[in-house]
Length: 236
Image (spheres, rainbow, N blue to C red):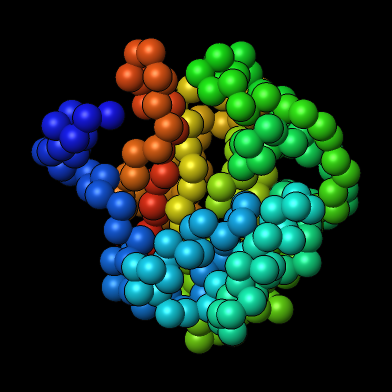
């Protein structure tokens, strides 16, 4: 998208009270986050961005795809505060599941892809399926977190975000901030769209803090996905 159009959209959102400038640095540092759970890490893009922007706390990354997990582990080797959990997916309960692996890797999901997404981005097509173990954030949370820690949870799981949150219910009271990839339209079958998360997280005392534009319909210009950052009201 052309810079002029981006600036117009940014100012339009600011006018109604939303900040869509990507400022993970401000979120993590200004809220004194010292543990970042990176769920759906792929090869570590989010963690690397956080480091470049000045975050110096601990990072715990989760990635279920074998090749991506291998690259993720390699990318984290020189960072003693970046821990890559054993290869596993996070969901609402412990067990096993089948992930549909996309051609581009990072669009892989437990959910079936829709024609809307496939038509807009052909390299999201599924090329194979793999069996993976599944656990919950609640089941591993205390292995990494002490009472004094301030925790931020990032979830990028291609339509499976609601299931990851369900598996985090017991510890939402111990989490200060959450970043989710949210969809304005159904891109994966049975996924929840952004309205669900606004209501769900409000129940746990989180409110929408900022918006980061993400994925667009290449023909119409409609925003199909964006990242929403939610901060607990008591931590503002």
